[in-house]
Length: 283
Image (cartoon, rainbow, N blue to C red; front, top):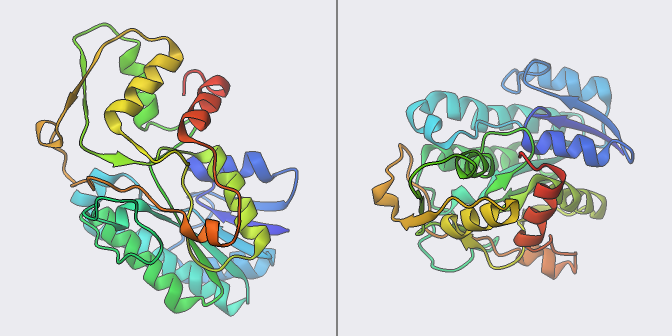
């Protein structure tokens, strides 16, 4: 397949290029290559490359920054998604758009499936939901894939932070124990997206690592244990570690659509994390 990837410089974009480059003809476009908010540029990129599909990974993903830079979050996550969707529709190209577990508040107390009503808490979640709505409105031939707690190589996310602080001396690390989600490897997600794309799945699909989820605290313990780091960790509440943006208490995703299509699940989050740290010991 010929596949155009937006946000190719991000965690998922880089993983897609690594995993797909031997199987597909790719046009990876990073931020410097394509302003996804430029309607004309999006149209030119799609019509010029003539892809079979566009995988839209470009997004403003810094959750706390989105809270303080609301217009920028909506410019990229909502307006950018609308521009890409319109370009795909005009060129009759299928669109796979990446979204997030943060479109949910986590108030259900169980994993959210594809038919649960979104109710985001943060500007990041609200702007990503607006992006989903733009994709549905402007490009009928679409698949919106929501994932959760994404990590990958070369980033500065939770896994890298735990590796850095876990290797340093100091008092016990304090990690929140009242936020639950599905840690998902960008590599595992890339493989799952490949199956979604080749199967021609449409609508909304949840795609996160299996295992029933975990807390930030238990995830941190697993990271340090896998790397043999001895620094101790203490659980704490979210209120003890305030952030600009509120986080869902339970943003686990039920990958129901994948089961209904008899599609393989992503690996258990512990297995995916172990594979990631074996391949990328420093994150």
